[in-house]
Length: 603
Image 1: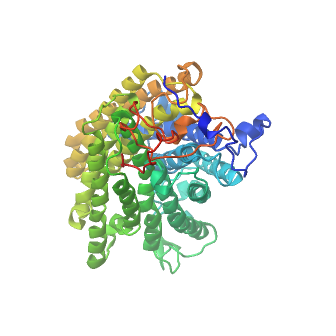
Image 2 (image 1 turned 45 degrees about the vertical axis):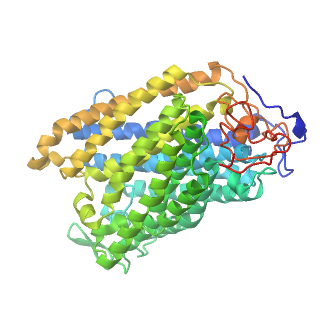
Image 3 (image 1 turned 30 degrees about the horizontal axis):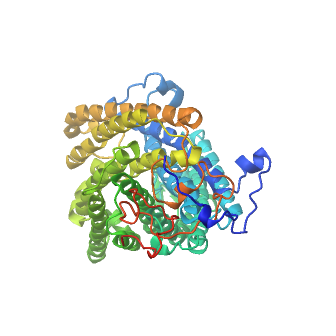
């Protein structure tokens, strides 16, 4: 295996002198750790466990739609309502509420920003840790009150929050309007608020670290696209999260203190006035989506960056159009702030305002297309290596195209009015977030696993995991487009009550069988992950022959990350450079005498 000689850089301490990395007790080293790598792994393990919970909740939804009002074998009596495992209408409402909540707030956002952001940012920029290690530790432990609140909500009367993951008032704002989920809904709001505080802590840390702590020679345009994705995501979180957090406190006060931020003048429940106020239920929608549409990009931009790194590495080519990729990430983030209203086309919005949101939403297709064509340009003519990370990265690109294309015409107000609250919407965001982001996350785990644990995951098991997941996810989610085009409604426990939907029952059964198999296949991933941590093939610093700075650190990196002072001479994608005999050219390798260091894309 090739290795890079680093002696010419000297073996000075890698630290920047700002944090103490001395090894302490087990508690201070592995529990309340201030080391970004341990915190990243804490986020990773926590989110993978919640991924399992979210998957089981999804199977409850799919069971009800495939075999309505029938008891689930084995799992039903353990998890679901007391009537032998049969799902009640109220319980079904809880299932789709908590499935979405867990997957968005406890899996996708924290695994991208929390796990990979924490682990990779200092390594990829040549720093020894985050700028604020204690704040970093708190950003993880502020997730635990959120975990506790959501777990407790499952054991509250009514089995958990049931106002949808969007928590629209007045259903969610007044205790009396949904007494079966009163305490659970309050716990839900507290949990989401704690997640928001955790994310804000992380975003401040990421921005400061990337701006202030880059290694010598690491200019902004020598950063890997993974770091650009994390940086823009941190900016999004810093500006959008305070709005949701404030809205969460306002709704909590409506529920607990009787204020009237989101309660109309008179709220009638069961023919009696349940509450009165002078507020606006629509105000919550504006505040919620002002955060939650940028959150869509918080859930995809880091994945885009990680996929760019993986594609370049295994195509053995520089990323095509590095700077346009950076600008397109920034454009997606900027436009993401002015399109929240497309979630509210059916709320009685002024048509002129609706058209403004519609046009802005369609404009997002342009920077997204830049990224897609640049990924294709990166692959074109490359010496492609079909490793497990590469397969997942290729799947991300193809699946993201499907999700993105459906998003373009869903942005048109007349189309949205028809397909709003149908399974077409469910198909769209699952293609973006599961077939897209989750595939990128799997690819990133396989790619950076050797750096995290010093061992390789098994390639054969990885490919089995990939192909079966890819087949069953398309069997589950592509079919939803057909259901949605037929008008099949989401969030209803028994759509077959309407005769026109009864003919769609066989298709729902097919989807549910695919979903059950897709969740079952993740056992292969879990076994591979856990087994490889202890018994996988040991590897050196750079098993993939990649160029990024992180691959010059030991595997796994020790305290302080680097055993030398990294100095950066070029961008992270200099594959196939004529300056060296090998097909990779690490960022820390000095150029030959008389050759000037380069920026990305300049050979």
